[in-house]
Amino acid sequence: MRFQAAVVTISDKGSRGEREDTSGPLLAQGLESMGATIVERRIIADETEQITETLRRLADGGDVDLIVTTGGTGAAPRDITPEATLQVIDREMPGIAELIRWQGYQHTPRAVLSRGVAGLRGQCMIINLAGSRGAVADGLAILKPVLAHALQMAQGVDLEHGGDGDEHA
Image (cartoon, rainbow, N blue to C red):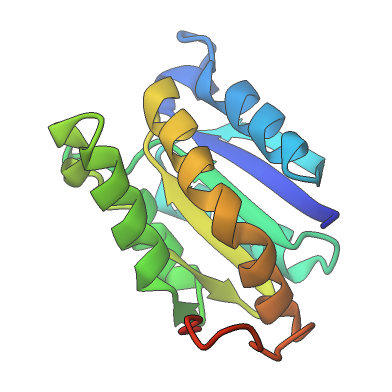
């Protein structure tokens, strides 16, 4: 499935040029391998207004099916990505965030410390991933088998479940 995606790295140091963004490029490359055309990739600071404005602009522009953020999901005082995302989305998709934490836990117990969320703003899906390269790699592997169907559902396309009755969405 072909789709349009945006990658947003949320990092104070990255936005100031004090740290190289290594998770954003990995995320963009992984999404491209799943059929995405990356229409925007940017680095912004851990600021609620900047995050909400960016997510709204991308989701409401009409040409982005998926926004994936990386960074700002932990327990540090400036980690506010989940709260900012919750201000923007219309409907949560908690199973995605739960699966990312649970499967990530299989590689590192620290994965459960991520507070990332997933949801929809209109027909655009927004997913938060933690900021490490390992978290991005794990998140991509977890999303690969479900992302195409989730995006089709969000777009109102191919809503027939069919199959052998094992589908639950």
